[in-house]
Length: 253
Image (cartoon, rainbow, N blue to C red; front, top):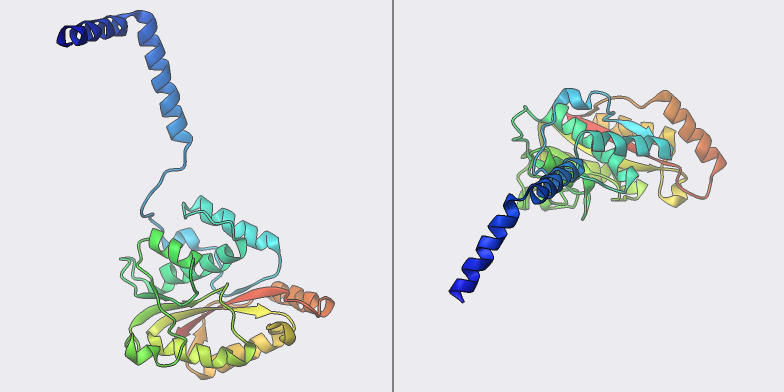
């Protein structure tokens, strides 16, 4: 058996020295390297600077699919993990911009609480950017004070697909704001549309933002006037369904 193995080894070595075999092996290697270069690279962490997200709104209104699709393309260009949910991509990108531009000091030490629910795109992207978000519903009563200290977080995310009844928005925001430090952020999404569908009109949205200001929460960024007008027009046309989504970023003063 040993002799047979030696003979087989000699034959393999002789084949490997033939010019035709060497060319075939070289071509196979070139093909493999070319294929590998076209495959998406898997990275545990990506480097994102505040300037990379300079054009991303931290407060805004989503009124059509083109905006959401553009957010998803932007996220891919930055190397963030893929998602098929364009709406979640839009609000997660805005919250990530707020986290990197405002809440963090550049060393990825910000304490991030994500109360958005399971399979959160924001948590995936924040993790890819070097943060360690914690899934905890700080908008629920007694969570702050029992499971987390008041003022312990740098950012709290309350994002779509999480939904809240319009009548409960003020209470939820008050609970969440207790979790963040002075200067910390709360990023929240609000559905736009008729109240009976669980949404707010643009005027009601502005009233909610004003009440947040009375709680010591300043808005980071502004609503686009054209988007607000488009949302109002859509709501007047569609009285039976939601018409959009608002992302609101508040800073505790």
